Image 1 (tube, one colour):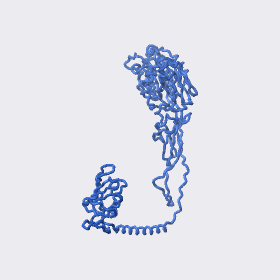
Image 2 (cartoon, rainbow, N blue to C red):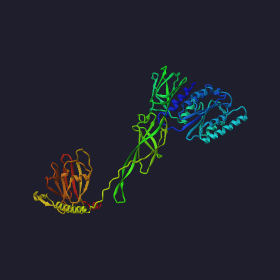
Image 3 (cartoon, helix red, strand yellow):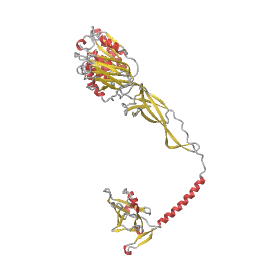
Image 4 (cartoon, rainbow, N blue to C red):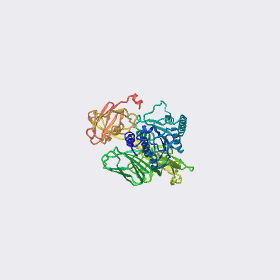
Length: 605
């Protein structure tokens, strides 16, 4: 019964499966109808003496997904056999076994019968797969011409209804320069395959199924040393159906299947076995075969799920940047409502995504027609959306990238029901004018006090070292009304880390005449040494455009030229004067040059 199906599955595994290895091929999820149009004229006895065409039809029917229906029209001088959509395995086996190659080739009537079998439902893929070894041929020229007219009319109808015709040219005796029946493939955007040039009949059939029809499927890994046992883990429990095709180049042994399913059937042939299980409750299918020494078993699986989309909505609100005004004048915050939608896919075994197979998988979907992509995490996809002006959302999943077939009840509509949020209370408006008067008086008093303190600071007297002609006398001088002038050029000679720091310039001109710590100057120049005493080295404005430098640190060493500054004593530095600062870490060293500020430099300040 299954003779020569080995050739078909070799091609599945060698040619079709590489494109399935990624498990992420794009599949068409529409329902489908396929009519196999089989030429059973007498010439097929020569061109198909091993009945490979019959075998290829049988294999193709068993390979169809559950959402595809198959029909059969076997023709010669008339219609030998017709099998409508929806017939079971028994009827198919009886019809294929009864096929006899005899008579002429009435392709016109056959195609008309095939086109008439298709339904008028919307969103259905429709195909005719025609296997023939020759052109239309009838006993008389009138009958031949009439068959050709029938064929042309059937092709036109197929084109109008979107039915594609694929033709498998069997044998090698195609001598006519113009082959009339090939118009059926060309006019319906189908294709023509030549036995030999396009592969064997079995290989061509699989190319049509998996390349043209884009059927979902997956190659299973069967270890060579399997000891006659194969364990298959399904992506999720609750599969609607599982079809497993087993292939061996040896004689197929007896097959035994263990799985928790409502129905399980096994069809075996010489080199092939087809396992068909329906409504699987568990997640594992165990296959064993006897004898167990068959080492080259290969397997190909189709799996389908029925599911529905489940959603759970959590509401929240976020405050808008602005605020709203009521008629009474009170200012109230404005809130924008959001919905966090959790999307799950529920099958007969529960949440299909609640397992490691789907974890982290990118899942395309749409919300109100807007495309989005989410990652499955912990069995669900989380999608957040603003619903200020929305009453509902329509969600639809795109599962076409998965190697399994899904029949999903979608789209689903989510109706948003916002919870009752308590309105913020507005306190009664009070007369704050007396309080503002009191605060104003206090602010005025603080301002006067601040001005007095500033004036006092500006009149602060400090000990200033006198010029060497005065015998190094230290006198307390009042620093009053002096302005900062010039600029400081700083050169970092050494740091703890050994990093090179480029020279920096700090402009004194125009700054407020207050005490400036060296740490402030370094920070302004983006020179960072940390806490090593720079905050205790003070600069202030002196008379005659001098800069008073004072070392109030514990362990820093400050030199004016070669003279070490005494602690707590201010030293005047004149233009072109130089200070050298060795900080408390004993390593970091900075050289500071007090320079005159040119008029052109002042303009850029």
